[in-house]
Amino acid sequence: MPAYTTQWFQSFQAASNQSANVIVPILLELTCARSVVDVGCGLGSWLQAFQSAGVDDVFGVDGTYVDTSQLRIAGDRFAARDLSQPLSLTRNFELCICLEVAEHLPATSADTLVQSLTQLAPIVCFSAAIPSQGGTHHVNEQWPAYWIEKFRQHDYTPVDAIRQRIWNDPRVDYWYCQNLLLFANAEALADNTVLQSSIVPQGADPLPLVHPQLWARTAAALDNTVDVRCRRVLRRAYHLAKRVVGRA
Image 1 (cartoon, rainbow, N blue to C red):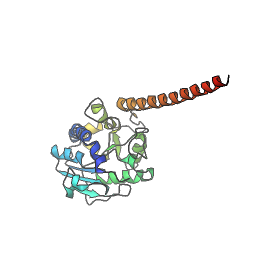
Image 2 (cartoon, helix red, strand yellow; image 1 turned 135 degrees about the vertical axis):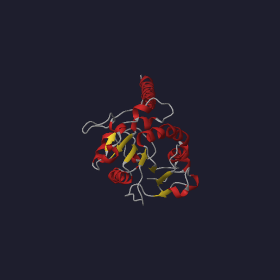
Image 3 (cartoon, helix red, strand yellow; image 1 turned 60 degrees about the vertical axis):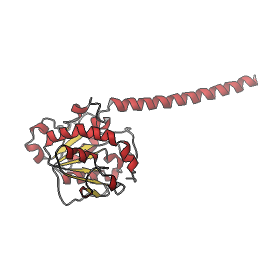
């Protein structure tokens, strides 16, 4: 991953905080997690939301580009690591979150990332950009089925328990609405009837959703591109016609 600046992280801080304040209570309702690790935590706004919700045992991991003086969590709750490499911490957690991070890593690191996540917690909350979502240094945008296959290789079952609940919530960034899935191992699912009710069956992938906000943004950009090209064509046709008329 490139060196993301503090300004880059802060540019979407307010929106991220708002999304976290909506989604964190849902995650705690579904998982009852008492400890959380955030892989690709940025400045730690999601972990701050967990602490505000009563989960004090939190830990964040991200690259050396993070300015630790700007962290929303205590400095001893953060570790700088290369996320494209196998991630080894000294302990495990009840919940791991990895939100809109995977698309920033090369495809050659995708299996490594998923393995790292599944080694950290029995339940993983995962969100990754879909094709053409766009963003800074997005090098591996994939549909959910791509990630589901990788999690299934570690016997983690996909659970689609959140997207429908947040889909129309204007406080939540659209990328979470369309991309957020849970993955849980057999032990985590055994006594959790709420998660069991939203399991994605083997061979039946969850819908690869595109949120209306992304569609509108993409359509507007396309319209602008078409308009520019049309103007160029018309301008060239006009000047060509002038030359032809001038020769007549």
